[in-house]
Image 1 (tube, rainbow, N blue to C red):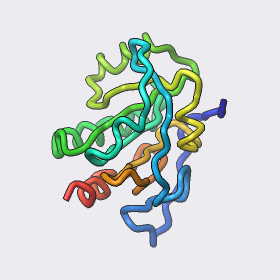
Image 2: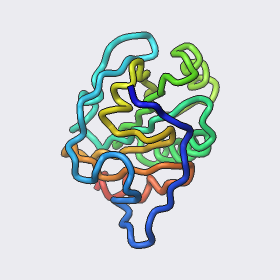
Image 3: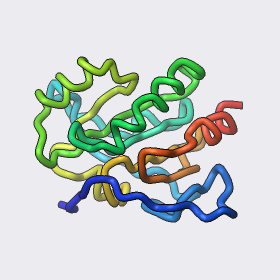
Image 4: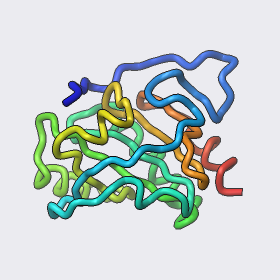
Length: 164
């Protein structure tokens, strides 16, 4: 299982387009991989089941991650602006937390994400998540359109192009 650390800040180059913010994680254009995770109630699901209907935004996060907390308003804004035109997923890493703790946090903070549990680090590994606050945006065709890391990411610029 991959070791994951609290989100480090990486700086995107000034020349990066909104559809390729940072060179971290999966390469842009990669077909989004299948990854076994669990619901917070312990049911097995595959991330692949969410792909191909709408754009999908996946954040690898943790309750203890300050960058993830900083991204919460961004996800709230995406939900308000796009509603069901985009699927928002939060994949909780299993480092220093439990499904019960994650579930309580998601409820208390009214996260607009469908929260899943990466019980064995499978999703973290196959999505090459370098740290918490890692975001992957997948287009309707199932390809990676964006990856980014940190608390300040312009996700709306990417999603706006993908929901057209």
